[in-house]
Image (tube, one colour):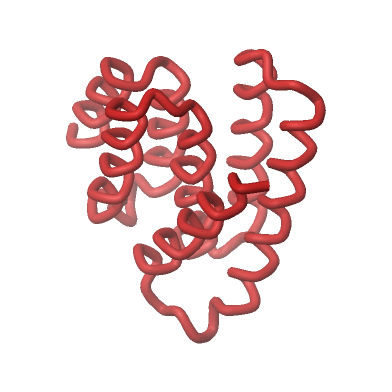
Length: 140
């Protein structure tokens, strides 16, 4: 129920893209409980709503992708979320250059965070680091 309420909030303040990704990430963690991740999720959503900067959708998405292996014990969930993110970005009419940059940054973040997985045991902390790295990647 909490994920559904969060998705409605995401749809209202961000749009269908934000709600869809939140629901898909919630589905990955249904048994594990993703609810501790709602604070960083809502922070990215609030920053987007306040600034109107559509690029903030990238760190929003990456925090879910980085957390996915902690919930599914598989890296494929991360790559699936990145693929869904990129498909949504195509629907948003992102240019090929922007999509390529987001893909390269996403790959680098997922590889880096996978290497740190043995040291970072908190999926929320990992998601926060991954989303901040994605935010930094927006500078390129």
